[in-house]
Image 1 (tube, rainbow, N blue to C red):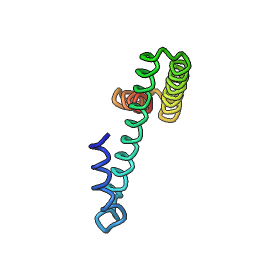
Image 2: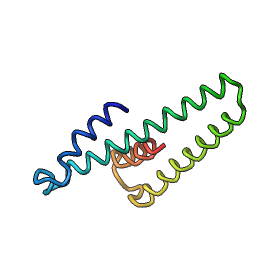
Image 3: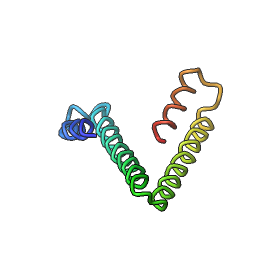
Image 4: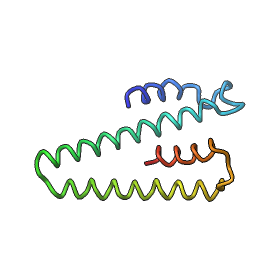
Length: 107
């Protein structure tokens, strides 16, 4: 989380400059770093929610965690299905693996 935040802050200075004009590489890396930092924060908050709820024996917190994880699982499966529908099943093994990996990362 900290590494991605620092990387995003360093790359942000190059977004929109002459070095970024051709292929928007810095803009792409900035978006990826920010998204990774946000996903990491959400992951840490979910883990803390589960740990706190189990430690304090709060069933409401555990229910919230289960519902959020279920929604994320359905969203990841939906992402995989959409990517398969867009790219088809006739792709190479690496395309299928990348589609699965994108869905897994989204989860």
